[in-house]
Length: 95
Image 1 (cartoon, rainbow, N blue to C red):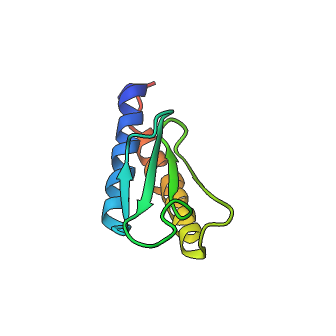
Image 2: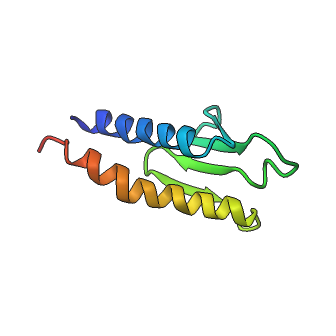
């Protein structure tokens, strides 16, 4: 698997994980700069409680004043990326 294929696979697995485990968020791909927003489907503070995912460095970001649940979700997502997606996909990289 080359570098571009690896990046696509990591991102694909992350989107599948979010859609399966965090159905309260919708993925918005129109933000530019390699970012995808995970926006709550309901609630008054949708912008405040959105989570950004960077498709190149596989990082999660959220606002400091986001809700406790948003922060917990973001930490769970980053932990899953680091522990369950990247190590597995990286084992397929051809050296």
